[in-house]
Structures are given as structure tokens and as C-alpha cells.
Image 1 (tube, rainbow, N blue to C red):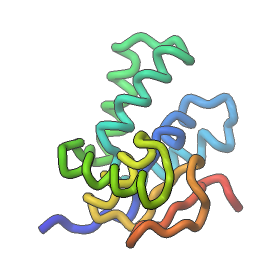
Image 2: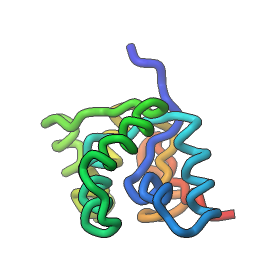
Image 3: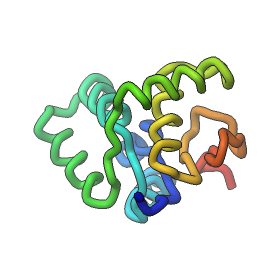
Image 4: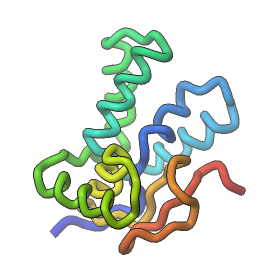
Length: 135
């Protein structure tokens, strides 16, 4: 059985390492350095935004994601995660993309999901949503 990991990260937190906002970039980097879980969904979304919005080349994205993967375990997406995400969509009325990240965090037995996109303090089963930039 897997050892529970406390933290999972949404794409928006990972993207803040590229931010011009030094305080948020530092906070995101601190959290990521502690380790945790990121899903393949996060890798995909990060890549899309890094290339489209930040103009990064794929080799630069690969290097940055390799650094992040040194401290964070990547959890795959599979049909079980997809089905659980559909349940989350139905029950909590969130987008499938957010629900996939929630479902991956639940499957990895995380207790915290760091994100700006969901309601701070919300509980989804054993998972607590935390905004890393709320004081």
C-alpha cells in the first residue's frame, strides 16, 4: 500500500514558478520543493500554457518539468480516475479538468490540494482545498 502524501498541486500553482509576481513564485516554489503529487493532467495543462502564454520551447518545458518531478511524484490518469472525476463533476459541479486533478489527488490519498481555482477550505471526501496565497 502507498504511503499517503499530504499535498497535491493544481496547474495554476505550478505555473506560478514562471510568474512575474515574486511573492507568488516564491510561495509556489516553496510548496513544490516540499514534494507532493502532480497528475499527468497538470503536466499537460502546464505544457499548454507554458508554450502558448509564456512562449517557452518544448525543451525548456521538459527541463522545468524534470526539475519539478524531482520533488513531486506524478500520478497517471486512467479510466478509474476518469470515472471518479465524473462523479466529482456531478456532485461538486466543477469542470472535468479540475475534477481530474481532484480525482488524481484522491486516488493518491492526498489530504491537501493546493489551488486557486476552487473554494479555499472546501472538503471533498478526505481532501481539503487550500489556496496557497490566502493568508
